[in-house]
Length: 342
Image 1 (cartoon, rainbow, N blue to C red):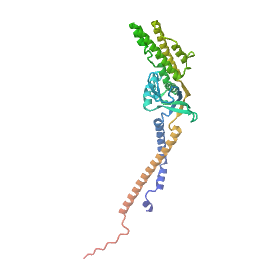
Image 2: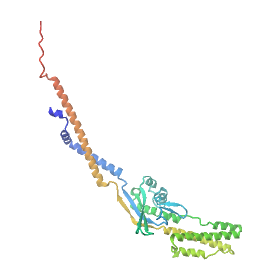
Image 3: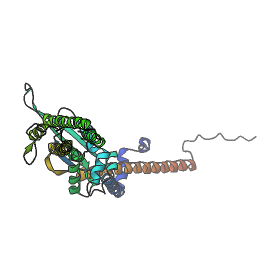
Image 4: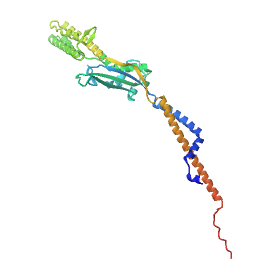
């Protein structure tokens, strides 16, 4: 009777768990497998990242994160991973399988910028090194080689833009051609000289940005190109020849400027090969975590099952005791008084 008063004890439940040890083991195995599969395919599928590190030489980008293209378009390094840029890169090669919209919306591609200053605090002009890093999820590509090709093209996008950018340098040349067609030679000469001055000013800008010794092509420097232009003077007596000469100088500057911009936008890859990093929990962590979850759930399930079973058993025992008590005569019942008959 003393045991009944105590109710269910932890020892009783543990005994019941032991009797159901095979059930607990089966539950643990099933839970472990379900947990592992859920983690691997649900939480951990996009665990490999492609990384490419590089430096990008754009004038002024060392002091400011913004860069103004010669055509006036403002560029920020974060635009490298914008949908518009990625679409342009996608169309430039065999990347039809790459879902750039989803990649951006899911934030599975990113770019970061790091500035390293070399030199002492007293240096007036310390050397500053700017590097960039693009990370992209490998699951969007058909392997690491395609990912590498894609990210390298993304890094080279500013250079590609500079090479293909169209700027109207015929500011005064078009006006001179119209004036020539109308027969106004005086106005034609005026516009030709204005075009000559305009080209000289543009060469000056290039020299200020890249230096007069910057080699354009075939060993020819910016200074040499500029001096060649300065050496020429518009001949007011031979308008047809002057018009053709200024037209040639304009076309030459257009070609030279594109070459300068593209050559100046050097993309140096500090790590030219792709880095594939295992992320997420990893197979070992998934296994250990799944086993831990399975053991806990199995023990809790067995404990609850044992508790309920013992409670049900005790209820049956108490019910049987009550029935037996009702059917048995009272041991200590007081004798009834005898009935007196008259």
